[in-house]
Image 1 (cartoon, rainbow, N blue to C red):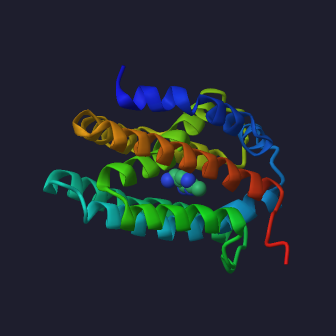
Image 2 (image 1 turned 135 degrees about the horizontal axis):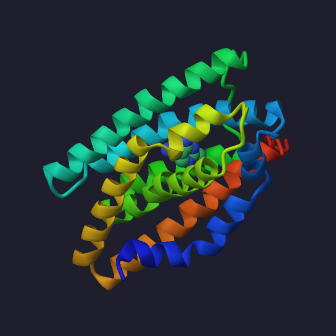
Length: 216
Ligand SMILES: Cc1ncc(CN)c(N)n1
């Protein structure tokens, strides 16, 4: 079994909760209240700016120039492709300002930035993997059961599409190769990082569904 297959099985209960979460169920059917989607998009634009930084920071610590280049390209894509998507949503939904990070966004971005800066490249790759893989799985699931006239279709197309799938495959291959050469201790840390980031993905959606901001 590949290391990423092992990771997927370990985090399956988290993925199931993400996939069954009302945010994603309602996004899939197009019934998600618009203010929840707007909240999500605004938080996600803040998330993506730091996600790109974390990818670039991880890339700068890669063990070879191939992996470095892939991570710099992931960072560039995160900025260009996803920002374009968000700019169109900002315009369509009349979001004039992203605001500030809520608790889940703050926790997730702080985690990714600190792992990318202070942990090994292997652990950083594992922490960044759910951002690719969980979105791909969620996007594929929604893509497979499209309902016509869904106002969120372009979001679904972006993550269910083949272009994103190509980046996900690359990130998975890098993670598997690194794990093959890593010590057992590093693999344990990679597993923990993958699980933590997967849980933070759940929290991110849950915050959007509940329009959660700071309690005080
Ligand atoms: C919170 C979050 N995680 C992942 C992705 C996909 N890169 C995203 N746009 N937002």
